[in-house]
Image (cartoon, rainbow, N blue to C red; front, side, top):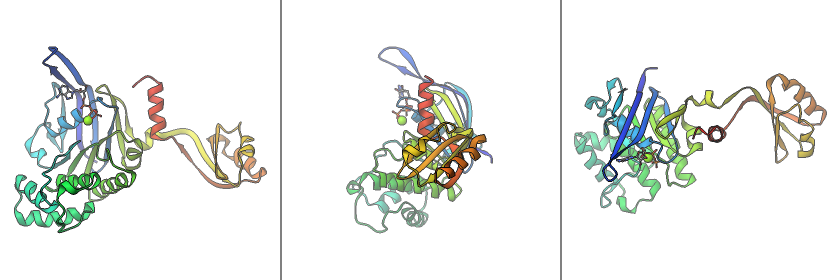
Length: 308
Ligand SMILES: Nc1ncnc2c1ncn2[C@@H]1O[C@H](COP(=O)(O)OP(=O)(O)OP(=O)(O)O)[C@@H](O)[C@H]1O
Ligand SMILES: [Mg+2]
């Protein structure tokens, strides 16, 4: 797969006029996003996520470093016309209906009225907003506004969609709806670049991630590779209780019991030993899979390693 976004050794400093000092927002940051993948940029507040997105969009020029977006050098206008952007806190004219607002933004993007009408119908459908509604945007809930923002970002049929914290402030249902839209964008062949704090969202939608802190990359790669724990497997049994399960440690590394079902973390070479012990204890084998830690586990590991 070709690269949709690549950044190499980017550095960005902001001048503080009051104190006459330079503050480094991004330091030596590199990343690579493949076409048609969902890429997550993760990091705590102030890590440099929004600054990175602005650099990719050509809204902010880096002090040094190079990069390409959709095959063009950073800041190129022809690449910009193929990017859709959902900002961190989008603002829309509240007195307009969704269709009126899409017509307004479509004209700004240089589209003709027929194209905008056709695209609006498709996009409102895609993001799950009603057609022909008289409801103006000021009466929308936060979740509806966020879905409208995605429709607006897709008006020019972009190849790359950049979203700054797309689920921030949404309830679990709203978050799930945004997740589903992001996945459907990938199915349409688009590349999605999102920034997020929400580890579970990133874990469930992203193919690859970059974790940054204080403007520098701490960890990056495909999620499957980052979360895989080599040489460790997960065995689940039904019909077990906690006390019986304790009999498996050792040789098991860890046992978790939930509603009569236990999950056993074990070094892969001890799988057969555990299965036979479980059978002797009267447990019913359910599954054996490679063990995968959660993104939260990875984060905590990084924090404990004092890298954040
Ligand atoms: N226009 C600006 N002028 C001066 N400093 C800025 C400017 N924009 C960002 N910064 C600083 O750069 C650093 C990175 O900010 P940025 O907004 O990129 O972080 P972020 O990861 O998006 O944070 P958040 O999670 O809070 O949105 C911060 O220290 C911030 O204060
Ligand atoms: Mg931000």
